[in-house]
Length: 282
Ligand SMILES: C[S@@+](CC[C@H](N)C(=O)[O-])C[C@H]1O[C@@H](n2cnc3c(N)ncnc32)[C@H](O)[C@@H]1O
Image (cartoon, rainbow, N blue to C red; front, side, top):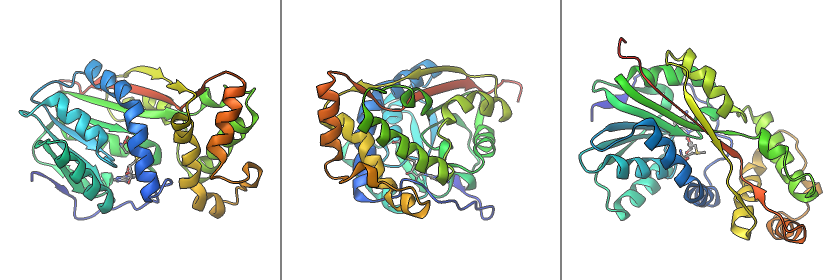
C-alpha cells in the first residue's frame, strides 16, 4: 500500500465514546440517519467517480462505504482507524456489501503519510476528538493533490441544547451528555470551528451547511440516550452524577413518553458540513 504509518510522532489520546459492542451498534444506527446529509455534503464538495479518497476516523466504515459507492469501482477509499476491532468489523461490513475498493489502515490519524496523492480527504465526527485538529487537517491536506477536495462533518451541540425546553427529562439527558463531553476535552462545537480550522490548515474558507435530523420514535430517541451509556465510564471518571436520570435502561422509554405526551419531536445533534478545495498553486 502506498499510504503508510509514520515511524515516529504518535499522539496518543483517549476516545470518549469507547469501543463497546453497544457503542459500535449505535454508530451504525446513527450512520443510517446521517447518511443522506453526508452524501449531500460529498456531492456538493465534488466527490465523483474514479477518485482516490482518504477517510479519517473510519469507525464502523460507514463513511468509507458511502464514499466507495460515490467513487465507484474505478475509485478507491483508504480508511484510517486506530481501533483494530473497529477495523475488523468495518472490513467484514465492506465485504458483506460487496465493495472491493476500500482498504483500512490501523493507525492514528496523526501518523499517516502517503507517497501517492489523494483526490480528496474526508471525515465525520473525528476532528472533535483530536488534541490538535488543525495539525491533522494540515497534514491530510498535504496528501491531497492541488485542486483536490477537503470535506468534513462535525457536530454543533448549541442548537440542540437550545431546543426542547418543554421536555425536562430530555433536556437533563442532553445537558449531562454535553457536560461529560466537555469534561473529556471533546470539542462539542467542532462543526462551527471548521471555518477557522480549514483556513489555518492552508485552505480557502469553506462553504458550509448545518442540518438537524428530527424525530420522536423510540429508535431515534435511543440514538442520543445510548450515548450516555457509552459515556458512563467517563461520567464516573469526571464525577458527573447521572443519578437524576434514574435507571438508564428505562430512560429512552421515559423520554419517548415525555415527547409523545407533548406531541413533539426531539433533535439529534446538529451536523455541520464544510468543504473546500486545495488551491491549485500549492
Ligand atoms: C464517532 S466515531 C465516527 C466514525 C465514522 N467516521 C462515522 O461517522 O460513523 C470516531 C472514530 O474515530 C476514531 N478515532 C478517534 N481518534 C482517532 C485517532 N487519533 N486516530 C485514528 N482514529 C481515531 C475512533 O476510534 C472512532 O472509531
